[in-house]
Length: 468
Image (cartoon, rainbow, N blue to C red):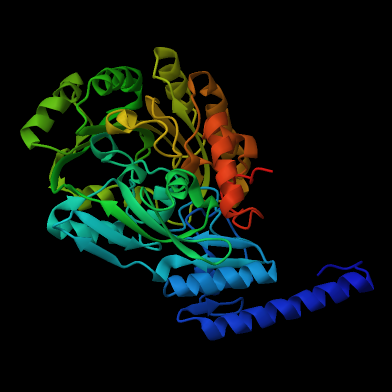
C-alpha cells in the first residue's frame, strides 16, 4: 500500500487483506494439495514461467491435487475478488499463467495419463506436459498431435487449437479431443463433448481458457512409432532459393509430411535456414517425399533419419529453454510469394539477437479438411503460420530486440490472414484476439462466455469479453 492514502482507503485495504487471509486459511484446510506464499523457499521457482520477461508476484499459488481442489480454489478466488491466473505448462508467450497480487492455480501436480490401447484413447490431467503424454502413449505405439517442445502444457496448447508435428496427418490437438472436464466460474465440474454440453465443447477447441479450468482431457490416439525426422541446414545466402523450394514441396506434400522452416543462428554464430522434417509413414515413402530437398544442394548438416516419435518431440527442447527473455509475434499466412520470402530473409539478415528466430510452420492436410465451423479454431485455409520469436538474455536489451520483432511483423502484414491465439504475445490487444476468430466466431464465443462466465472471472487469458 503506497503513501498518500486516505484513512478510508487504508481501512478498506486492511479489511480486504484480513478477508483474503481468512479465505486462504479456509482454503488451506480444504486442500489435498499445497499452497505456496511469498517468503516460502520455493516461491520464486513456483512463480517463474517459460518467458523470462515475466516477473510477477502472486499473493498465493495453489497446487491442487485433484478436481475437488480446483473447485475449492476457484470458489476461494471468486469469493475474495482476487485476480486468478491458471497455469498448465507455463509456456504461454504472454506470461498469462501468473499474475501480480492474485491467486495462481498451478495444475502441475495433476499430470497423470491413462491410456486405453484397445480403444486408442488417452485421458490426461490438466497439468501434464506433452512429454508426460508421449511417455505414456509411446509404449503402445500410439500418439496424437502435440506441440513442438515436450515441456509445453497439454492444456494450454489444446485449448488454443494445437499445432504440432502430426497436424497435417491427424489434425490439430483440439481436433483429436473427445471430451474435457472443466471447472466453471461458479465452481461446478462439467463434462463437455459432442454428446454433452456440445456448445461448450465447441468453444473449448480453440477458445482458450475463457470458459473454465480444464482438469482433464480425453484424446483420440493414432498409430505412431518410428518416423523419418531431422533437419537439413543451409547457409542464409541460399535461404531465398531454399524457401522457394520449400513452397513448392509443401504445396504438394502428402499429409504424412510436415516441414518446419526456421531462420536461425547456429551456436557457432552462422545465420542459416533449416528445414525440419517429420514424416509419419513408411520410411521409404518419406525418403522419396523429401528427395527434392536433399537434391537442392549439399547441406551444411543433414540429421534426417528414422527415429522414435518421442525423440522428435524432444528434438527442439534445448533450443527453446526456460527463462530467456521472449517477445513473440505471429501471423497466419495466405501463401509464401517471392516478395514475402525476401522480407523474411532481409529482416533475418539484420536480426539483432543470435537467439531470435523466424519459424514458418506448414498448415494444410487434415487441418484444412476439418470443417471450419466444427470448432472455435479458425484459419483452416491458411497456407502457413509464421512465428516471430525475439529472444535475448539481458533485460536491458529489450528495446532493440522487440523493435526488430515488431518490424518483421509489420512488414509481413500484407501476406497475413489472421493470428493463432496461442501465439498472441506480450502487449497484444483485444482487437488482435478478435482477429484470431473473425467476427462471426467471436460473436458466438462472446455469447458462450456470457453463458458460462458472465462476470468474466476467467479474464487473465487471451480474453473474450462476455456478450452484453
